[in-house]
Length: 413
Image (cartoon, rainbow, N blue to C red):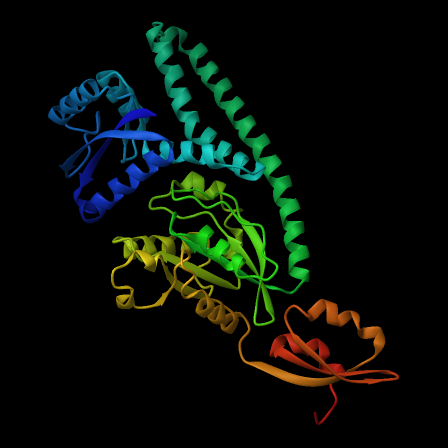
């Protein structure tokens, strides 16, 4: 495991959240198999435009690297290319910022072809200006002057064109994958099943909740990957769930994080479609996390970015088995470990997605029996009588779903 020094500048504008942000950054390092050998911070009104840290703190950082045998430095703050290069040259180790760290994690965690492509696009977009900067530095080191600068500029243009071509090719492949996924979603929509998406900050237990719910199903269901680390899940998973004779599709989505790089939000927008297209969002919150309110707010801000803020939500406080006084939590509480509260959660989900049911009595010809297969997952259908020309059935469900049976309704029933 590589040793790194975690560094950060605490700016006055974000001083209240700086400590938790640095803790999260350390967790990101652990998720990338990096050992944080030491942490160094500096409080300042602004970052030094040349080296992020002021001179004295920079000297301390260099001494820490030498004393602890660090292989690299990770800055919580975003760094310009020139700044990271100067720090690296002074301290003698590689320097990256939090955005590059998150990209590294996404590269390691991506399993599906779509997730891998999305991550590669984001990586190329992040790397391009750095590659061009390195090429310009090499040109200057070779003594490039005004008279021969054209060759260097041409080389940079060629590099940029190659990167853009690669990005374009990857996006085209992504588009084809998204077309196939859209076709899959269209088939799911034809089932008329409601769609419920698990959303929330990374590592709050969304995948654990999906697996806990699946374990309660008579038919079971293939479990999704769950690990106690940030960004264990990058791919959207979907499973069918049944409760009280009602079925719905349950989606597990990629977790949110504070200051998620814009490039990654753009790259993973298609993955977040499950949240944007859902009928109901289950906002999972880690009740044992002291910073849950701040992280909950970040989740809501991310929902605004993907235009999903108006979708109905149920807020669920997970991991109450880790609390000394879970009764003090104001809200719906669950434990994926003990399965406490899961029955109540399923009841609330059904009440939200299948509100105020009505019943009608219909006479259906035997040539309409296929309608039973189409709607049985979302409507209760009880056959009351059989006749030579058809059957009498009581159909119960959401009013807007009953309209297809209206013309078969027996008047007065």
